[in-house]
Length: 42
View 1 (cartoon, helix red, strand yellow):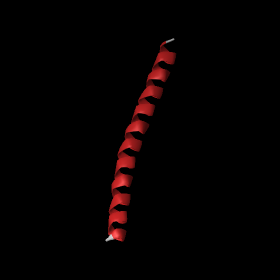
View 2 (cartoon, helix red, strand yellow):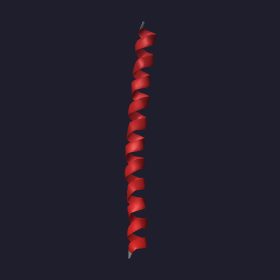
View 3 (cartoon, helix red, strand yellow):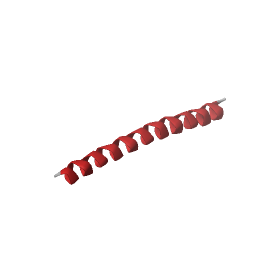
View 4 (spheres, helix red, strand yellow):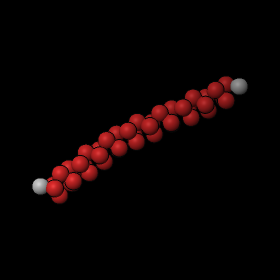
């Protein structure tokens, strides 16, 4: 029983970490792409 709770807690933690990483990675990627596009236009 305790093992099951521990596993689900780890699972939720892993999902949160992945969400944070993708959020930061996505915003970083967006900034880089925007910079490239503005450089191409000018």
